[in-house]
Image (cartoon, rainbow, N blue to C red; front, side):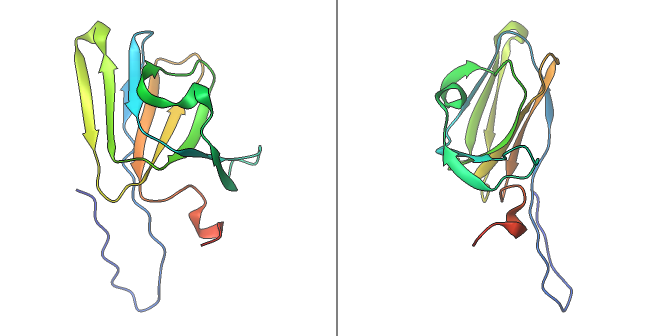
Amino acid sequence: MLEVQHLGSAPAWYGLGLHPYLPRTPATRLQAQADGVWHEPGRRLPERCIALPAEWDFREPRALPEETVDHAFDGWDGCCRILQADAGYALECRAEGAGLFLLYTPQGRDFFCFEPVSHPVNAHHLPG
């Protein structure tokens, strides 16, 4: 469990996330619900949430994208499955208080990251 307890007299911003790197093979499949993705127009910080592109829709298990993806996915229900059929196992993740996940899939690498988070990247600069 991750928790933050603020003891200062002045307000401060906090966000929580768990950043596990996992093995990636051609057989790796991800299943995770999302409604949108936080779009970053080349400046490495997202500015708005856009509709989920079909190629990043993981409601049903699907292979990870070949291209590099490094985005926050919004509207997550807190559950995901990572299927590693060639290794003979599946991982199930459940998170409370994390309505988003970050997905990092570096092109041509044998790992990826699935990170439950409590906030979008750059949240302190976004409206609301």
